[in-house]
Amino acid sequence: MIPRIEQKLEINKSDYPSVLQWMHKKNAKFLYPERLICSIYFDNFNKDMYYQTVEGITPRKKIRIRTYNSRDFLNTKSNYNLEKKLTTEHSRYKEIKENINPNIYIQDGIFDNLYGICLPQIEISYFREYYEIDNHRITIDKEINYKSINSELIYKEDSFVLEIKANINKDSDYISNLFDFPRTKFSKYERGIDRINNKLNNY
Image (cartoon, rainbow, N blue to C red; front, side, top):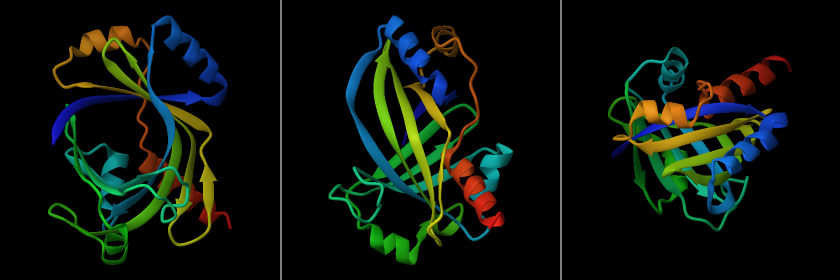
């Protein structure tokens, strides 16, 4: 696992043009074409990863299977990767297992040494833009959809998310000065579980 710094900013859709304008003034470099990302997130029976995210407990993990180019997780020609993200007090680590067969994990679950058997909880998809400012990678996630695993319910997120990703050795004060705006706590997994549960409760 490679440690890195991740900081997030929740953006109103109406503010998106202003953010792009700000990035242009910062001489943002366009890195890759926009692409559609689709992931299934896993958790154990008690939803420990969800509750640890809500409470801000560290260390904690996120476990997901990710693919690309389709909002229909099992209907894509892209490969599937198993990703485990570990969040500690000061940094984040990501471990990737590439080119897996997702059906095995969806049916039998994923065993984790901290959480035990973890099963599919929610499907999350969104479009991602990729930029770079002064050797810092910037992504913007938009048109975020949360889809229930056990029903056809879909919730469309109102917000966009800008994320700053930097090497763990980068000076945190320099990052704060370069990106002079307030950070927010935003977990797609946490937000998705909340939104789908609220929608189910209102039926």
